[in-house]
Length: 347
Length: 157
Image (tube, rainbow over all chains, first blue to last red; front, side):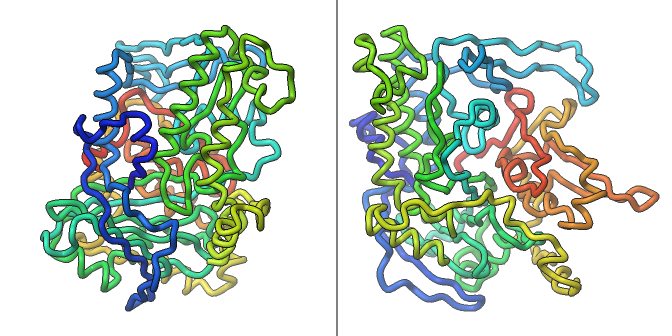
């Protein structure tokens, strides 16, 4: 589900450029499930009202974004991962990529290629939820100090092809309750796309008490619920995926700036768990980081101090007055959408 | 559920109320088998029965096939685990929860001839969801990137 607000700012003519937005949301339903039946919420809670949003395939959407970016002359290198953060004291100076061609016993194969050190004036970390590099930064620079610990959930999703008369494209269903018990947090979603494609997903908080709880098993129970089974029976599952989600919200976002580095997107926990949306915040924080980076690199100062100017803690250097509003703008843009989530950390 | 209501209060009050509730790391919330089930192991057995019919519901291995995940098999496991915890503490206390919270059947417990539990890591099944790095109660699992290019495909997802 994509809130197009950020996309509109980034690429105003996204429709003309053929953005692969499968379908616009037309109907919202929220149900409380019991083991055998369902109870419809008389009103859809405001954060779950999705008019104006789009159901997208994130896979297709990011491929399209890649084309747009490369069309502007930006190089994207993929196919290798950042393995380690390179640091000089407390300053980030770049990233080391992983070695290639090591066998299962740790010995070098004929095609061995050592990882390379990539040095940069500024590194922006967007390594996603529980990113391995961001995790290291949080530990080494104590960026989470004074913040709440991040709260996570696991999301499982299947893509189904069912007879096209089951749900009208653009129908969005959210459920609470069964198969989760009172003590477990989570819910499920069904999004209807054109040509009988359904995106069926299930989310469970990673703070459950029962050591025998199995999210995948709970997802299976959800699909066997009479209401869900009536939508899926006779159809075919064509894709499966799973991903953790950072859903702690505002009070769990760590310090997102450091000497020579910024953190954006899911890596920093920018996801609005009340609205169940994070794509637009990932894009927004990425844009803010890019703007801040542009000014900082041009002014020749990517130190932590330059990012902190906005807090008034230090005297702004003239060269950097217009530079790093990253933290400030992030707080401004995310405040509206993230604040409500703060309580989820307590539950 | 209670948290959802509270978050509603915070949302409506624009964060003025309930702005700063304290939280705990999620993995600390998991209880031991003895705490949760007491001596009634039958409840525990019922909880682990999977309803799988392969048309509506699937086992994890079948599901993983549909994620299109692929890794070069001949590389070190990209999940670093202090496995000495598995048979000595984690099994008796939590019943190897990694075998359940992993949605891709990466973790399997096998018993050797002496009946000692040994963790088998099917790293090439991994769909890079990071749940194990987060939820393992002893925090002894570390996810590191596998060799470049490996991972789920998610075409059309």
